[in-house]
Length: 592
Image (cartoon, rainbow, N blue to C red; front, side, top):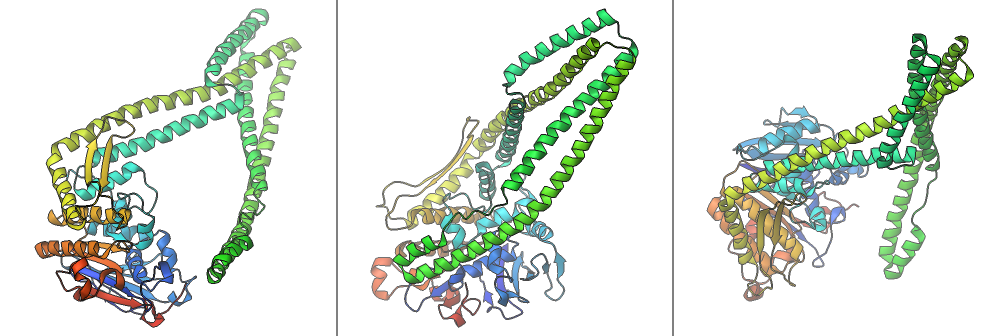
């Protein structure tokens, strides 16, 4: 069982927050009622959640919230997270001005130092220790999977796909792979399909690049090149036959011919490289100029017309952006200048090499002259050599494209096998899928009014379609009274999480929901928390950690008739309370 114990600071940066089994509430209290606020301009609820994620080696945009260069008061400060795995405590300590060092161990007084990569591997082994042989798991998935168990307000607000809890870009079938793993369903075939599909896409892109380069160099389609090769082969045959029959070249000429072909091919390659570098150099020079894409004055003016204070904020932020862009442009100019020097150096070297090769080729032609070869022979021989060099160049492209096509066909066959395996893996476990579906329906029915339009849907279905061999569908009844997309996240996450708890899998026993109750009516929140509490009474082995404003989860007794009432002591679940008084915010100060 993996649970959170407490988060604290040896340097007194913030007050200790302790977590217990069951429901844990991080509450925000505003002196003037509810306030829709997020990020560091708020009072600290989301900051606490992001700090927990930061302790678990977040390398996403969340890290910017703990940058001591931006927020000087974080310098020399640290945070420590204590968590428990099978009743054994572990500690993670991080100093904000040493982001590359993580201190970890069982004894707070003798922690060892780890890199971020090392720490992710260690935590992966501790948090995802499920030994089910039907499930595929990669150690490198730690940061992706932990995103399911810790969701902050920033990520939740932007989250459109219920299944996609991954902060970085991932393909649809990567996301399916993670969800099947968390659901305890076979995911190896889906994982293989995802890998193969990505590989196929890369092969197709590489093939298209080669075709494009061939067309740019020759001005012809690849189908026309096949005809050209046949014509080139015909001309080579004529030239060689003519030379042999008319002049009866001796072996020395053959040796010179081979050398001339080799040198001509090399010159052709060097000229192509020369043109490529020259284009790059021109592009670098064109990118020196700093282009102002926005007009801060215009935008600020428009916002000032809406609200003066908001306008000042916008102007300040835009000024910061413009300053950053100019700095970025300056740094880029320095980088590009260095790159320009490097390219010019490469161009000069290639030019020298081409000159040397031209001299060698001229010398070989001179040898033909010395052997008293006639000018007509020399011209015919030059044409022969050029035709052979052209043939080699075109064949290089054609052979590479044909090789890629062969790999593509093989990859398609492998993908078709993976599609069949998806169906073969999912069909025998329909009973297991039905149990998860029933849990999803149970949660939906408990917390969504039966009068709502539409119906709940939870399906996992394989398909023979190569482009979409699996579809996972999650829907809840429509409702005007609650934020549907947010509530769908709650229902799905609880279904996955409680299924983990029910089956006693060796995965995290905590689920953190930050800001997911925004825009959801109080009655639904009451029903949801009562349902979670009923499951805790049954299992006694998990933590459900939420952040919420006081106005979102509390109400006077006179409203119980409308909202119902909690079946547990909600005050006993409050682990921390932050207000809009700077001294009572998470970091004991207001900053932005």
